[in-house]
Image (cartoon, rainbow, N blue to C red):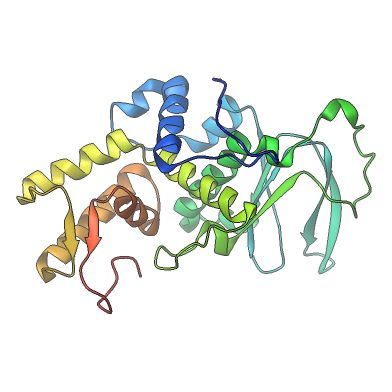
Length: 265
């Protein structure tokens, strides 16, 4: 696996622009499987996590209401999960390099959401070790009390699945690291090169020459762009929402007017 170098604050939070994250994703994917950048296809996210990143992945009940979707463990420690048999929480010992995702993702109709959550947690591992991890040589496994702070990210549903219509306020360090994990996940699952290739081909076939489509400008074309979204979601095996957000982030879709129907509901 390649070594990533990027600017960080003193507390380990990366300083990264969208373009820098796009470049990081491209370098990682080239190293993992260069073919993923030449043909529009679905990234094998479980192979990427378990083989390329050498992480251990498992399913757990992370909360009693599915409010926590994923968890990444940066050092040996205890983590708190939900115990459905006793309707209570419990602390379990976990090794460094573990990713948990919620048991709700075992449902077959949750594939797109599961893949994005895995990509989000993998992105935390790639970008945020300096923020959440510590020197394991200075610690002994299970030395820490379960009550103490642990080197773990717990990612809530409203962070991973925040609607694109809700502007994310990037104020705190947590705001920034969650945005970074979201953006890197989208670039890994929907690489700019292949995603753009599909979209540009669709635009040419439809006679759209200005490089983007203005939503709410033509009802028939609005219906058409939504069929494009469905095709993109199928090609890259992501949710409809994830495909729409990627289209907007790459400025292939812009919205006309205020108060009209939003491209992303």
